[in-house]
Length: 598
Image (cartoon, rainbow, N blue to C red; front, side, top):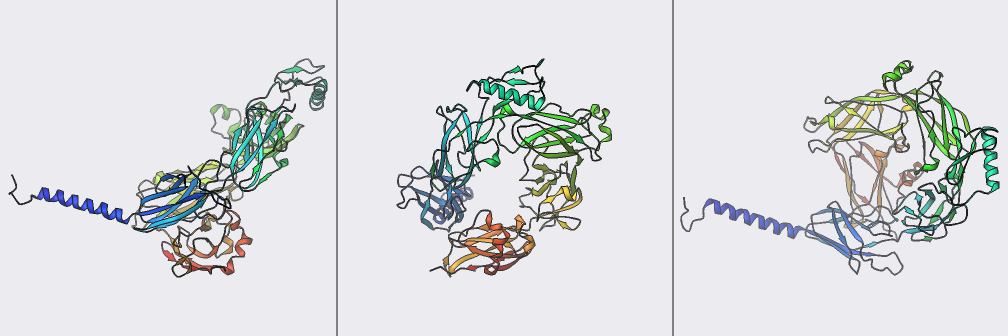
């Protein structure tokens, strides 16, 4: 049916109305959009613009590249708080407002229809460590992996054809420098008669006259004088990981100290020929009886293991009498681990494991020198489990549908992983909320969890067992043993601590850092109750999901990333702090004022 001329049909009216609404919404959004702009410059006394730096706006996934004048701009921003991060090769990644190299910055507050202009990010140039690595004949050695610890930007490189390396973009601090042959370096020099005699004497000293073999520079071996054949597990000699100024032991390394932007040249050191040794011992059960067929592993804290000098377990699993031998062990500090599980295989059960409780474990620390290490005893102990149930505290009285998808794990950040031990243990969660982690090797662990369901933003509010809190301190399962009655409570009721930090009314103080810590000194080691952050450019700050309790707030001009949690440091803040109470599921506001120093 046609519409009457001069009268708009309902369909046309609807389309016109939709167009008018869309156009006005877009216009309103455009008018309400904010802008952030600024410049990136060097940290010199006379700052120079930095061209080609990448500027990232955290929270919206937007990036920009500075022009010839170092300028950048982000337009069309919704109201909110944004973190501006700047990075460029050879420089240290920096946030706007950071007062410490590599430290946290100041969030930029963007209001509707407002432009935030004139931001200046001073981008510090990273420090450099460079040098030459040489072989035992004094000649430069190419194609070696050289790295610094702790790492930074471009913290590992290969030596070039002149044996030179250059690691740049480093934060100021102390570093250990190490070189690692990627392959066996053979034929660098031929051994002299004295070298051969010295190696022969070493073999006879360690294994007795009439047995053993000598390793040639090319990696082969020849029978030692007076032998009837090669030793079944001869000692080896080869290039090992070496630390500046020229040692194979990390504890003897000399740290290299560098300042911001410093170029530290001449950090030269030689490769070291390291002789290997053996580690021998026995694995025993909880009662002291030898345990056969135990799986063994050996690990080291070193990040790289040289293939030519890799420790090798010649009896794995252990012999029927529990004896083991590890050969080809370069000097260093190692962890020997043993584990047995009665469910390995029917054959293992038939060979005596039926009498051994499942999931026994044991570790021992060993310092390997240039002589054999004997008499090592690894005593097995029972593994442990953590089990219990999940409960849910919801505003609506309901619980999420996909409970089985909960990520629940134990994390031990300080433990090194190897074939038998890992630093993370994950839980099996049933649909009814029951969970179990383990069996696992005891140690210090912390509970970590997240639940993404129904968009409710659940968080782990508490974890208890037998009246004890399981979240405020690491759990040492080697002391407490297994836990079977844990109750983990998730909630969608979020706590929030917010406010402003000002010098005076309407005068924000974004140059400070706010620290939040418990009023109860017994909780000063509870990481989940410790927070720090910079106010935004408008002085506003916010901390979410702090556990309920009494807290202290303090404002500092600078905060060390880790040192501020030291109890002695916190003690000095108590008298200058403001006390505030956080209650479950509530928003707490606390404004702070600081006096501007003259």
